[in-house]
Image (tube, rainbow over all chains, first blue to last red; front, top):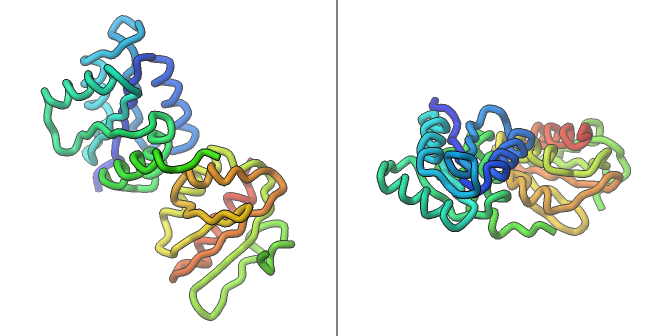
Length: 130
Length: 103
């Protein structure tokens, strides 16, 4: 069996992406490859084509990868990367950044396939917090 | 309320019926926060039975980690676990064990 579905966290802020990654490590499992791609190449607020592309490669264990962008240019830069390197098993998912990532990592840790992880992340939008 | 609702912790209060069903009520030793919710959801996904968690008048599917957190279950309150299916008893035991040992 292939490894776990991978998760890439794209944020304008390196701290936001790595911080969410640290949270996922606590809630999910260390068997799920979670890779943060936050900030610019030189550590400023922004997004980086190179960091996102490398993160996708690093998160890929053969079972597919979902990319979760926070907003704005995180979405646009991710789309550019995926347009340049189109793969059926790498998908950007429209989901709440934190909740979607938490739902995705738990589903991936439980052995869910790419479709199950995508669905879990998307459904996070509809789960009440209170 | 469950007939088991006065029983403090999980494993001893598992009740199986003629049909493959099981239920248990756990009094939480700690808030049902993110980490145990994650463990619970991963464990629930391993069973074929249909599992439900009940707390404060709400019922959710524990395979959804966000739904588990959304229960907002706090220390000292009770959570009722029910399962229907061939592995119902193993499912409720597993989930009750996680809840009873949450920190």
